[in-house]
Image 1 (cartoon, one colour):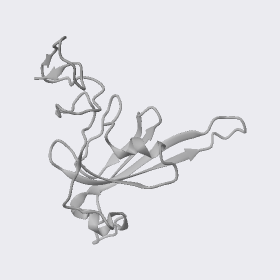
Image 2 (cartoon, helix red, strand yellow; image 1 turned 90 degrees about the vertical axis):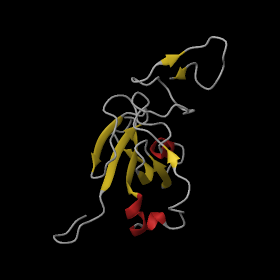
Image 3 (cartoon, one colour; image 1 turned 60 degrees about the horizontal axis):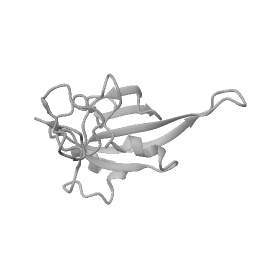
Image 4 (cartoon, one colour; image 1 turned 180 degrees about the vertical axis):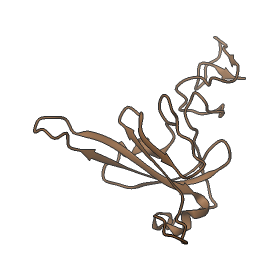
Length: 157
């Protein structure tokens, strides 16, 4: 992807299994991946299982304000034996939005438009109003009001 004297686009790459666990990761960008647990459920790499054979595009922004063009697609690996189950993964590939115009996958996208908020993982995400949060964050106090009903059973203070 890079030749001497001709720097390429810095990409990130991730492979996720059907349970949401990151099984391979590499990043030449500022994007960090979850080391434990699953990746952010708002990231398009999880939707790749729902749309087999298609490339998904997403304009995403992490809590630190960095914006990315994210691509995702499902892949299957035969297990090697006739009756063995097929292993299915989703592949995520992307770059920071300032490099996106160099990719054909950015055609037709408004690179200055709306970016979906994503995090790294629920445990370390600072976003308080996420409708897909699966667990409370490690940092921050929780307020529990048994008489209130909202998306989450607690407030993050």
